[in-house]
Amino acid sequence: LDLLAEPTRPRRVPEATMGEDAARLAARLVCFGFDGYTPDAHAREMIAKGCGAVIIFDRNIKSPTQVATLCADLKRLAAPRPLLVMIDQEGGRVRRFRPPQFSDIPAAAAIGACSDPVKAAGATGGVIASELRACHVDMTLAPVLDVNTNPNNAVIGDRSYGSDARVASACGTAFIDALQAGGVAGCAKHWPGHGDTEEDSHDALPASRHGLRRLESVEMAPFRAAVSANVASALVAHLLVPAMEPEAHRPASCSERCVTHLRKNLRFGDGVVMTDDMEMGALRGIPWPDREGE
Image (cartoon, rainbow, N blue to C red; front, side):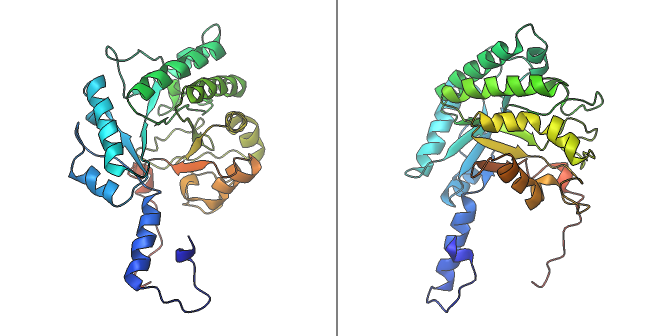
């Protein structure tokens, strides 16, 4: 990172070398996707550039044997450095490993509404961990810790454990404990809480307009529990949160204030923080500063 800082004295480092090193450092922070059941030219190029992670989708999965081979091949291409393989395996309508070849994982809402939701959430985390590890997948972007207090919120809906922050906290913690005990990293999403919105961030930029006191007591409570459970990572939403970020068009995913609150106020420290997908529609309408000529 020192290469990215303004030097205090002239240094005889070739300009091309500095650029190459900076690009490789930046590449470590990139998670990419690709098409097909085997590593295509794009995947090979991104790995060669030093990208630190890859995410697999339905378009990459044909069978358990095929996807296990794919993930192993991706890691071999990156060797000797590690390559993190991740997936969206929540359960319900967001799952890439599907029956009949994989377990039929219920939606979080069904788990939250059952007679023993904490036990069920832990069992689900354990099953997901065993199936992902068998296929060389290192991380799932789960659990969803949004508290679903808005019945018009279609993008979260049954992906949430429910409208009670205490249930969401307990279920999320049980899921994380079982998942990570099984050797798969978890991801608390969508910080700082996507439960009381109506717009779908895949298409538009939503907003959570509650004050900080409400956010702390409801939306952030499951994330605080997840941090206490040593969750491996957190995903930040493309979501306007005026109580935390006053700049009108800056979503949480692009806000130093929102990420700092997670790291300092919730004591997530140096845990891994990532944005939601950078190709989502929420980012398209943002009036980014004109940097022409800089």
